[in-house]
Amino acid sequence: MFEASEDQPARGLSTRCVHAGEHLDAQGAIHAALYNHSTFGFRSTADLLDVVEGRKEGNLYTRYGLNPTIRSLEEKLADLEYGERAYAFASGMAAEAATFLAHVESGDHVVCIGDVYGGTYELLAVNLPRLGIETSFLLADEIDSLPSVLTDRTRIVFFETPTNPTLDVIDVGAVARMARTMGAITVVDNTFATPVNQNPLALGADLVIHSATKYLGGHSDLTGGAVVGRKDLLEPIWMWRKNLGQMIAPEVAFLLGRSIRTLVVRVRAQNATAGKVAEFLAGHPRVVRVNYPGLGGGSNLARGQMRGFGGMLSFVLEGDAEETARVVDRLQIFSIAASLGGVESLVTQPITTTHHGMSPEERHRRGIVDGMVRLSCGLEDADDLVADLKQALEQA
Ligand code: PLP
Image (tube, rainbow, N blue to C red; front, side, top):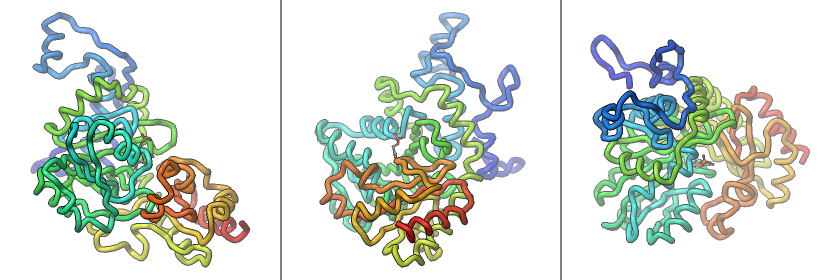
């Protein structure tokens, strides 16, 4: 990490995206090289034992993360999120699963606040209970009741902010303070906001998770994940990653490091485009609601904890699932797809993809209605995206 000092002031985010974690190797490659190797050799048994027994840092075996391409990526990720360390994973879900498995055990309790990605909901509502771990779910506007839900067995308070797909903003500092009084850690999924718009660790969270498949990768051509935070909280996660074999592949780590170098320019452009699209939709007669943290300048909370409002938004049409699908199907630039955060704009009805597995009652309780459409704004011209939405809303 670039530490600030008298002769070396703290560097800006764009500089860190390009340079953090990059070290010239023996060949002078200008960026971290791709080491596809699964294993690394030693000149002597003593040298090998130095690495195995932790006396020296070194490369050993890629599934352990002891691979130069993966280390370089992890240094960059830790720097961008102001963490002591980062671990990269094969996917965002792998990062989440390892984090929960490392920090909760049978009899423990987890609290999940607000809407979360459907896979995360399934992990918390179906997988963890099978291991004797109970999860309480609070809506985003219920954080005042957090103290009454926390118990002496609560180990993790987890949330996304902004949330998926309702884009609610949750107060990271307030939740972290409440969780800490009961000895629980706060884990924030920062996938939607990215380190460009928000740094949960700086706001008081203990660990940050990313689906790197989204904005960090940014081109819809890789699957990866990350956990960032304090070393003592990451150490137990390392062993789960190793033994579940959830390591990111070196090729993917290389591609992800390449993508992160352009993260700031991409996300700032996506912030601006989503703002324009949200304003257009808010003024359209067929749209009954727009969910975007920056709408109308953003709430005090959103402005206080975010530097930009992101490229994601959702809106609600007056109409059932079929009528909504007709609008979605008429879009020409937005592709109908489940993911987000890429250079190309994507559209999805959450009830058909990300939240398809959630019961209709639970979706209704969370405001994930049949007329909801979620947009991921890419890098196309904002005017073209607005024109595409206009023709779809008016002709469908
Ligand atoms: N977190 C959020 C906010 C997501 O949207 C997703 C996937 O859509 C995940 C986590 C899971 O990430 P992955 O698909 O990389 O496992």
